[in-house]
Length: 296
Ligand SMILES: [Zn+2]
Image 1 (cartoon, rainbow, N blue to C red):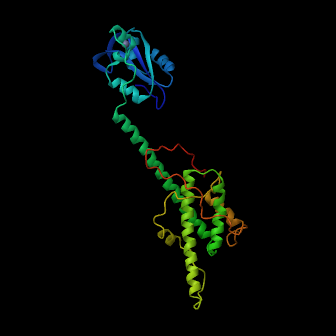
Image 2: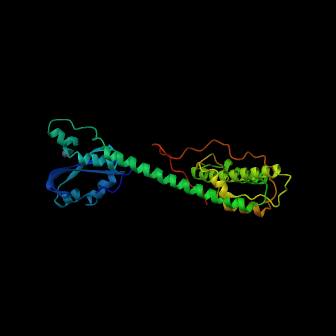
């Protein structure tokens, strides 16, 4: 019937100058039509050409005139509430005047099941959004795996400096929930790998009487196992900016001969990230506004 009015708009009531057979209820007569639109005048102009409402098209065919009698702020839910009241004359000022009473001013309340449906839709959107954040965290973990592979053989300090170097631009740029999820997952995996490397180094030092060959391996699989409770959106880092991707940044670092040397800053940048944590994942009734996803 009415084809729009999601969100703010208007509910309108049209009064027919005489009742006609109701095409939507073959056993009934109708004298009013309720609809909703953002632009009521434009919608009425459509109705005047027989579009958008079967009842008004039938009135047009039968030569029955009609006119707008009421408008209320609202959308489809309010329109439905008005229709389901099945008592349009009560809201129509002309019919009320004819009956010697005042019209009801307020629309009938939107029924709980409609409100529930709206809440359900909002919850679904949030759940979907959470899935999206999980996807970004997974990408962050893949970034970390690549990063650690590229820095294979580097010391814990070198890896930490490189990670700080990589993530600082994101800190200094515009953060997003998606970016936080990705950077947080990256930092979580790299931190775990660094911890493991340091532990391994300490063990080596302790066993100095038995010098070992080779360098300790950074095992990202083990690192992952060691932090099963890593939150998906823990305090994160800001190095995704503009069109840069993690892969681009890592590749650039490595091409610049970064892989085995410490940062020019000597690793003095704060890392892992300690900035204000991002908002928690959606859980309550809060409806965070749309945020732009990080460019890839
Ligand atoms: Zn009326």
